[in-house]
Image (cartoon, rainbow over all chains, first blue to last red; front, side, top):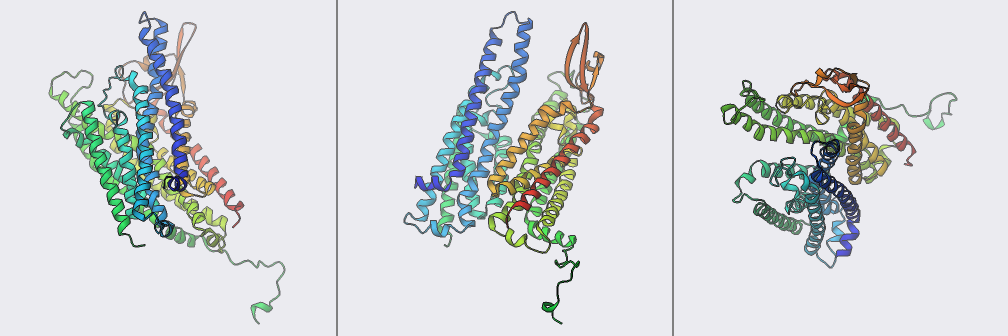
Length: 246
Length: 310
């Protein structure tokens, strides 16, 4: 099953993998430069000298812009993956009518669906987890000078386990909507809308009502309900597949 | 006398009479109505949201008129109002600003690639391109009509968005030349949407599959946007050199110029800057080259269509 899933979705997986390798490379490169510049800036004496001012303008200019660019890219990754990875998984087979063939093999349509969803979710979640850990490291020097905390809007979502949880939930939303709408393009648009609405509601409303207020408990709480939501979505998708008349 | 016995007349055009352009309007609408209705509904929904949010922002902003941001003391009624405005209204405004900056990429990705790639994916191009209208006119008609509609929609939407965003220019000390603000206003947003659509249409014809073309469209658009933002915009021929340091004194405001760089010759300090009054020349320059790029992309798409064996 792993081989068939790979064979069917290799376009997606190769793209994700390439993007992942490029992102990791760029972030390691940027992170080393940022940490190097930060160490030099902190060690610089006396503070008012021309050398220190140059170091400072480098750190708060070039490096800060670099970090912001990386931040926006990391922030946008889950929603792009949700749009491009989720809906095609099942909707493409329905659009092309290849589901008639796929679902009548020995494996059975339920196991087929579960295997695909679980395999792809695992790949995406692990990739997101690695990216978010790297991001935390790249961004760490800026937290104090830029007066940002780890629970700040936008930072919280990109660190810890939240990014992985959002990527997983986004993919499951996409797959579910793909099966519900059964056409790839409309499903992509709807996925974008649903994801944006869910993220907006979480940031502007839900998070204020969490029973916990510090970084890790909040992370675990958010990842917990997103994981639950993902499980529910996978179950609903499998339910839809089961009910769909071949 | 039947048609079959009629000998070919030399010098007479034996090809079928070309289909009038007006008919193309109907076919284009019929083929792309889902997309057109979809994009109009999404923009209309966003417009209603912006209208409601904009009224709320203006209401909150009106309450700040008598507060001086520079001299506000804590705690006071003004401090509470400003803090409320920054935490609620600006959080919303900033989110909308980010969305607005990525909107052309999304609009382009969802509208452009499907125009030709869907026909190629489904094989219906064999039918479409062999009709009386001819594939060249077919392509020109589609690109022109859809491009015009999208540009008009985008222009109207960006006007509403500018109205929504104006109060934040004052409260956040931004000006209309700021990188993320400049391309959401005036005619620039519409031009970027047109280019995004043309990039999408071209890549759809080049890659011939919708979803990879969508991904590529977003990537290419972001590339062009970054080049414009980080490289080109500073070099538009509107910048002024000066030694008058008084221009840059005082607190920053929406009327502060955009300082490009400063340097020293002997003992004189020089600055190169763009005043806010150059907003419209910059808009026309940027929209101008974007329009040229859009037409070039249309031409390249046409070339690909002509080259492709039916």
